[in-house]
Every structure is written in C-alpha cells, then in structure tokens.
Amino acid sequence: MEAPMTPLQEHLYQYIMEDRFTVLLADETYQAVRQQVSDAEAQLLAALPEEQRHLFIQYADTENNAFSLQLRHVFQEALLIAHDILRLPL
Image 1: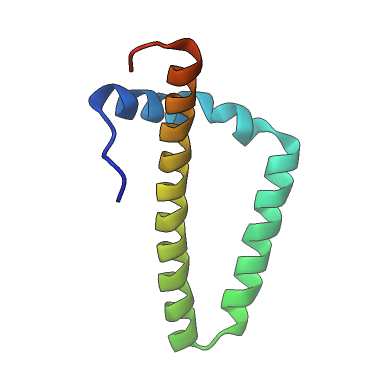
Image 2 (image 1 turned 30 degrees about the vertical axis):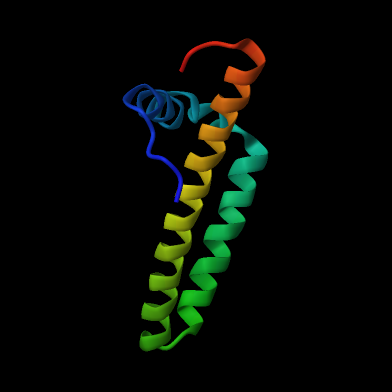
C-alpha cells in the first residue's frame, strides 16, 4: 500500500482535478470517446436483466474506484520524478 498524500500533494491533486481538468473536458476527442463509453454503457444496461444491471453497476463503481487510485498513484509518481529532476522539496 502506498503512502497517503501529504496535505500539499492533496491540495495540488484537487487543484488539477477541479481547475485544470477542464482542459481535457473541453477536448473534442475526449468528449467523443466519453460519449461512446456512455452510449455503450446505456446499451448494455438496457439489455441486461435487473440483477445483472445491479452487478454491472457494482462492477463499474469498483472499477471507477480502482481508476481513481491509479490516477492518484500516477500523480504521486510524477511529483517524485519532478522532485528528483529539480531537487525541490515537496
């Protein structure tokens, strides 16, 4: 298990996710891919019986949590690389 983020790291991460992420959200390619994902999920959910829809939603929630942890890890690694390159304290 990796170390939790320091308050500064957490603040930087939240800043990127809340303020800088809008650049990606405005990207047409990203929007198109997100729409494809949304459409595919809607089609899948519409085709599944209730019990399987419930299982899929649980799976999707778990996958989203795992992806969130992955993003946080990548962010921490990027900070460590920047620290190593620039020799700046974090």
